[in-house]
Length: 310
Image 1: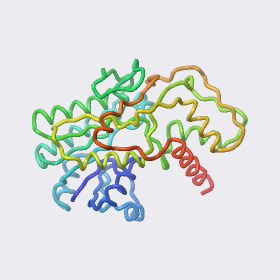
Image 2: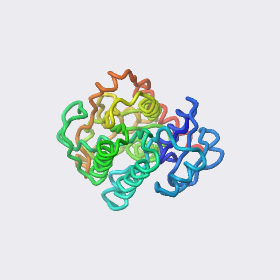
Image 3: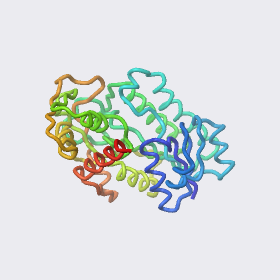
């Protein structure tokens, strides 16, 4: 079975390659950046095209391997901060690329299933407790607005042209090889030593933390389920919220030392107070999160220390 991944060279993409390849799929990728041949062989990626998601590159993949049975669309903006700094670039990465992909599917592979990685950022602020898929959508930063536009494009092509899409709203994905965001920042600063660590926000912000290894399993499972709806939105979260302060404390314990963590008390731009999934849909389809948060954080710190020694 020929399966394509856009953004395959990204954080989640590399895990998904391995997950699909282990299941026996022939996996091909398209996106940005150099992809070493040794890494491709290790992960199980058959083909890599370094370039834009556009008809010429999609046609090239099809000419080499035939039309795909499914595409996992992971390409797009990945940072709230960068979307605020460079909104047009974020729009191009997330919205324009999705429009080009959908148009290619309409013309060349209308029966291909599209599994789309979106974000809980589409929900925005003012949510207390688990958020269901039908909750009000009020994104704050360009990042969230662009993810919502991407979802709306998928829905439009599903209704107008029959292009089947499963949109997965991912929450706080973390794991080895993530070199940005809270976990990377905390580890980087802990590695410098010092008795105190001051972080932004209040520490009471609630997030739904999911290990990338579980997320890759989830995406692969959703791609394999029978498609009985043209367009479907599913929360890719665990249903369990954890405070940022508790995550930081876990990291300090695993890192070692006596660092005291404090918080500025200032809310960060584009940062909702609480983003926790209602996971009832995942429970109905039988998906189970396997990696406990404590283990995932320990694994991340162990990976970081290995990178530092290397």
